[in-house]
Length: 199
Image 1 (cartoon, rainbow, N blue to C red):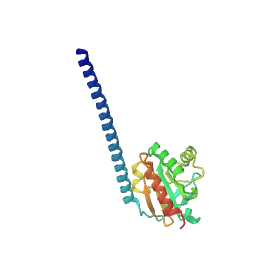
Image 2: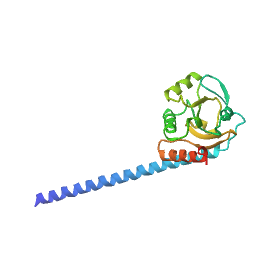
Image 3: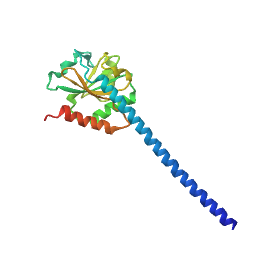
Image 4: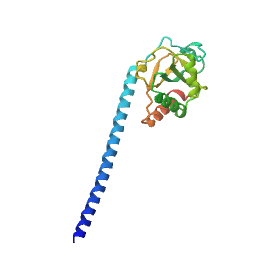
């Protein structure tokens, strides 16, 4: 009888332990889902704020240099047939992982001709810019350096994308985040439809 009682108690404890592990796993899963939801909310909030602050900013001129220190006004880029350009904006002071993510996402998911894409960077000098171009393999893209503050979110320390048109007006700004690539894919698909596919 004693053996049966011990076996019963042991079985009961094992069932309780398994139940506890399952409950712990459910709680952990719910906490993880809530954390992701919270992070996604913060990303959407940040992008909403960026959009409010930056969309419709228009420049009289936008001076930049290429890797050879040749000076351009950004309006010169629109003398070709392109009337809108997708810009990837970042500074050498931005989060390096964020820069890498922004560039790799743009290169792999944008689906827009390289002639309609430009990188507008802030680097100390053309030598640093040249190293960055080589490191990220951006030889086939237009890459420019500027010391100017382009938008208020330059100070946020994160790369961002936007469209600039031939009037030098900014629109469709977004900060790419690693947490949800779906948002970036949706962004690029909508950009292609809105700006780069002739109807």
